[in-house]
Image (cartoon, rainbow, N blue to C red; front, side):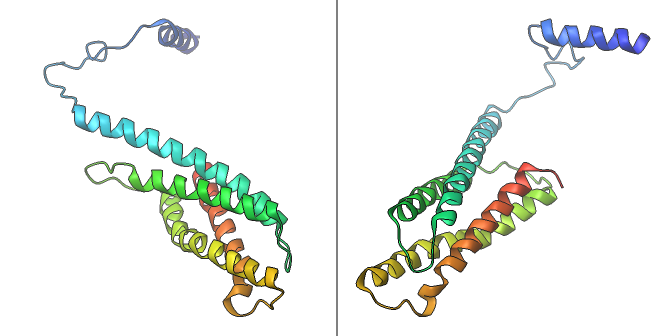
Length: 176
């Protein structure tokens, strides 16, 4: 019963309290220094990585349509334009992740973050190569020429990019 009363009191204080001060937490304000530069970096990094997450999931949704609309030996406008839109979202998401400010000091990365970064080394190059191969293969299809060599690998490379991106998103969405 005591624990329930304490929990009720604690929760009501959290809900109705204006703001906790360092004094409330028994810290001496003169001894606690808040670095405004570090605080701004943390805020900017958090914002940029949240934007990265939203754009990456959006690109994954668009690229799902691209993958599902692709057929060997056929080129559709939907496949082409959804690939372009998915790629634009992907590159924008990557830009936000790469431009996010690094924080000073050592910090241990989680298992999920390590795999997320490793998978980027797969989907990153594949996302650069797949559109080029798709464009070149499409040009051959339009001319009625046979698609040969590495151009035949467009679907395999695009699939590799998609599924490694899906795996990278999964590592950050679910705790393993």
